Image (cartoon, rainbow, N blue to C red; front, top):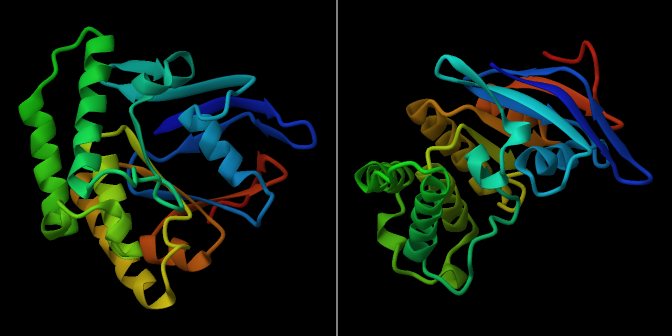
Length: 228
């Protein structure tokens, strides 16, 4: 498991203060809470989108423990699927996926590591097959349906072989008829890849469908005794 030993941030009228949070290293973990509880802020802080006042996040890496709080955003190697997917609208689906490979290339260069193109292209091929997006790769993002955009966003997040995948309200933009299918697909892909995931949600159906371990957040802190 990875352990968030300290996570602190002051947003003025709201504070995040988490002193000890143990995240399972497999399966799906849900950070659940109502609007304004701080769940999206926690996700942004861990990703490095927002700057934390303090962050110690210990992550197992071989025989060592890596403190992600001391690494750059790029070096954290975290994948994310946002609520509105955040795809590049001026690109095709294929170009969005190629962008992820180029980002992996730049990360390797910045860390003085060899870029194994075959490995990342293999990740791309597996993601495309698992998510069934082969037929839409050359379509502009602007013509894709909500479900297709979600699949492309998930494939893009998986290409770089992230240490952990973040899912930010990933089903809320879909209509009710497509949510069940999308939840099933995400669960199957995560089980197949073995990548641990953290989902931020206020929908308990997400938690049930993904078989998630649950932590409740309230007022910017993990509520003790609220893991179920």
